[in-house]
Length: 307
Ligand SMILES: [Zn+2]
Image (cartoon, rainbow, N blue to C red; front, side):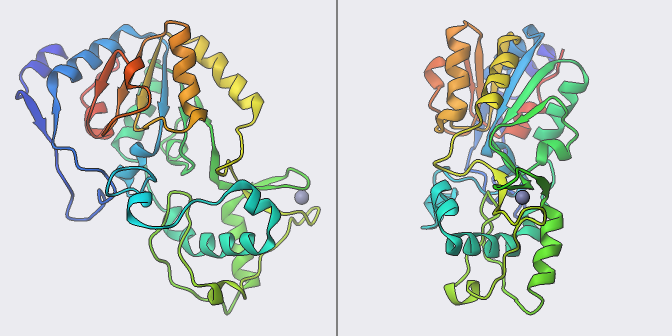
């Protein structure tokens, strides 16, 4: 692989955008220095139990916008902000608004497909290179790609949990339930957020009917960690155990601004487990990384062999 890389030009030119618009939410990134890609290849080759953590930067290449990227992230493009946990818990009106938007956005959001980065990581698992993958994404793209050694740190929008009895059900089933309860309710989807949210006017929302849990009548919530909530302790402990079994950490497509992911890099640093990062733009953990490759996740990962 080193030989192959050495035959590449000094830097690798990347596409800015495809004609299909699928990369609309990928921040601009003109070049990646081949020298860093070679270092990353050595880093991956040396690892026998690679721990990978992924974030929104991986899914932008599947057409799902992230929150924080400069100019193209939702924070930069819109005034909308993600649902807060306590607002969802306390307010039936907020839940109605959330689910109405989520209902409209669901067909598009749920249809996104894994990209080359998801597929490469799944192949690394098959080849025995990847020990465990933790994702901060809630879009199910890793599981759609067939990843098995996977923890969805912030849950998954494709599941629904009852806050009363804890029952887990498929989001797809809830969509049919929404349709049955709201046969005349129509709305048009705008831009879809990373969590499947969509913008609707208040008067469109007020007639939307939201079902309760069929078992206990409890409140239904997407099985995701909203902002302001904390990740389940058992899940965090499980991830720490998988990380302690690993000999290298690779962060892919995350700025690590959220502590729930950043803490694992701190843990790796404490244990002297080396860290490499692939991300467009700076991250909170750049100073802790042995290698930092600035580039599109899929294009960088597809250059690396799981030797
Ligand atoms: Zn229930």
